[in-house]
Amino acid sequence: MNVQDNPNQLQVEELLQAARERAAGLSYFGDDNYQQALDVLTHALNTEAKLSAAGIAMMRERLIGQLLNRLLMEDYFKRFPEIEQIEIDDPLVIVGLPRTGTTMLQRTLAVDPRFYSAAWWETRYPAPLTEEDLKDASRRIEMAKVEVAQTIEAIPQILSIHPMSATLCDEEFMLMEHSFLCAMDAYADVPSYTAWLDQQDQRPVYTQLKRMLQFLQWQKMQRGQAQGQRWLLKAPQHLHTLEILLSVFPKAQVILTHREPAQTIPSMASMAHTLWQIYSDQPDPRSAGRQWNHRMARGIHHTMQVRDQQDSKRFLDIHFSDTVAKPMEVLETVYQFANLSFSEKARVDAQQWIASNSREKRAGHDYRLETFGLSEQQMQDDYAPYRARHLQHTSQ
Image (cartoon, rainbow, N blue to C red; front, side, top):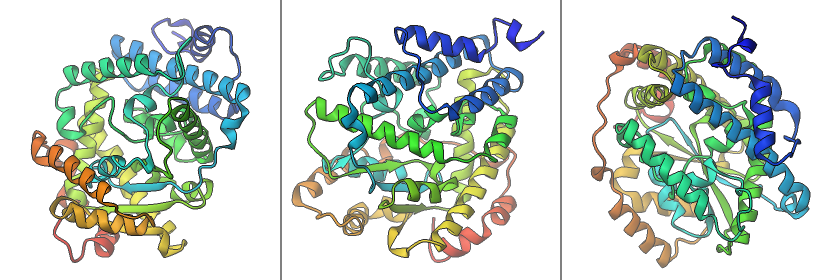
């Protein structure tokens, strides 16, 4: 049966039309560089991902939601041209392999109001709802809380991998998804899309991300939030495209986090496999392991090459063991790197956050390399240059 004739499969034109209807007739999705990516993605989802009936329905809603956000955001940019004038060129960006302490570092820094950050609800629902008061985002926050609760109920093990909260700051990954050129393979096993994605120009991901950050910052202003000094970003996807990030955000500074890959890669594979289970009844853990190890090894090596071509003063190295053992010293170093004073209030707020959110309060995360088709020898081989450069004198 042809995909277009199967109502149980994702059809691009139906997704576009559904988004238009929900946007009360808006029709401009922004630059059309997303269209081919959406075509390739939906084809892979239909033919490779083995989506369950529930998974098809959830993925359909996810894609429509992203298209709807594009429509609404472009309409706001048209009606409020001052949004595009907001200057965002110097984010502090935390980049590293997953499970290297990036979330703890980001959320500790985010308690300082001098940093702009995006809460999970903002990245999931970045555009105001129809007839929403711009000063009150409570409906979106409640929607996000419900979704997080449902996710935790469906896959409770996710909390030991990544502590989810609708109201805490999180990765900008879901903002980057709106280009459809980001790693949508985090949700399903779609090898043809992944292979295609590896050959594409990723600049639209970052131009779209910048527009969405401008949009979020403008909304924060409408809600009367305190004005920050710079954005705080964090996502492992930047490992693959660091040179583009540094081009789109020319004054960005980068914190690189480090930990032994044998302790991070199977955890990343476990996270991907856990997310795949939401959409598919038949996810293969070995496929998740092969896919994400390949992507992370290539990403970390790419970042090392990009770094060598940039001003060394734009980068700061932080090791996971230090983040855990001496977090206040790490924060002191970060503030100095970011040219911000580590005020007494910032110290107290950070200490309180760390005391209330230590890693010991999280459930243990049980994973093994073998579960995901990986081995210690493969970790040694795939990450030898990285380990020699960054882990030679540390115990991670």
